[in-house]
Image (cartoon, one colour):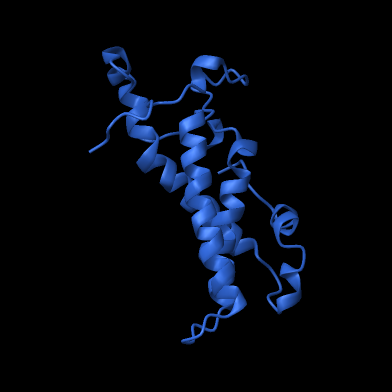
Length: 151
């Protein structure tokens, strides 16, 4: 995995004091969040992208897994930060007592924001440079579905 979706400085844009809570490094948490984002894209984006909308020609691509280096990292940075904060960083800081502490409330907030952000990215169109040209054409960032009924 060569691309990096987020760094600690990206996380600090949303939570400037996150390094003040006693955890020396968030590299593992950010890496786990990045893996979660890519897994989410494999589940929610990739099958629809490969099959295409009424385009049988895309069935012969031979690609069973996406190349993570072909995504536009800047489009997924916010989702990665939200995932890191909601699923990996704040759970380490939360006390999980009957009365929610600040970290549990923030954890829930960022989990909701992650789902919202991923939905917006999918609806806007995931930028995936399928032909490895280095330029994402309009056809490579078109939404894969148009608010159709999904079962």
